[in-house]
Image (tube, rainbow, N blue to C red; front, side, top):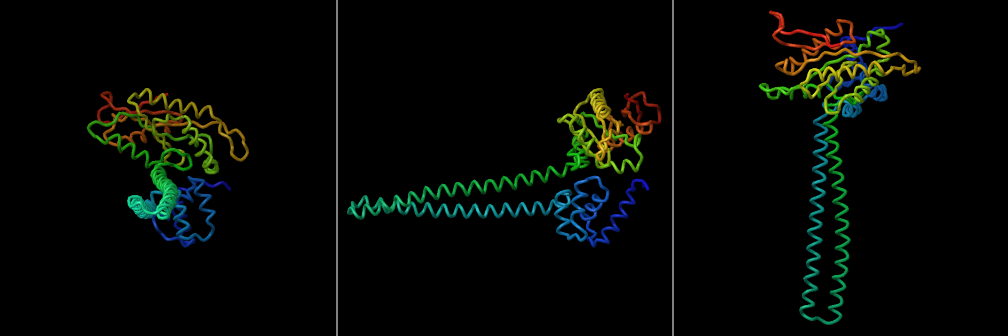
Length: 352
């Protein structure tokens, strides 16, 4: 029998029950991890969580968390990287000490050979001194090559640590299923818009949602949710200008920030994206059957019509709500001006 998609409350109760049954400590990072697995927004997380088996240790959970919830493990990643850097610095200091000792020994042999030459020692003494100097020189050349190889190896290790830190920082702002940005990236970008509240950055912001409910039942959406997320996330990633920001919030809701003050250009770009939705056929991942295409609804607001990041995001949400309420497959632009009726702080007008 088909069942309706679980509400947030239902999932929260299931998570709490599951954690108790599996003996998982009620730590915030554990709750977020288990919630993500049960909500099913990230198919890779669901698969890896199930693969852990019935009994999950804290170490196993933390290893999975470092992969999918890096923000919850920032301290441990930083601590591990700091330890690795400290170890490499210690190794490098040992190499320098060895180099200093080697140079000192080589300098001593040169001094001894020079003394023999100045004193015009016998042939045997002079020959022995020169032979010793030759051996020392050969050892010195060999040691220098070995030293260069060790320094190169340590340099590679340090580059690896640096890359790990860069990847960790980047993953904090990535939505794994779609490879788009996540809500954290969106909030960070909105905050930058109003970094100078007296002179906000001019841009256009859009909150959009795929109109899956116009074509599918709740049970069908739940069955196709993973495929819908990856399919339309990939479509957005391919169609979206790389100079701008595209993120996925949750489900089939997305956010965009366009680096332009031209409202017409923003709506044009949104309409291009909507056109891509209408031309790309969706296929059943199990049977390959053509499921037609889904449409997109969007709410738009320009940054000069809001006084803060919260106002800007709220305006987009209200415009999107208007678009969905009108039946979907619509773009609604939030506007403010002298034509606004008295007693109202905002108006909406549709962009076809």
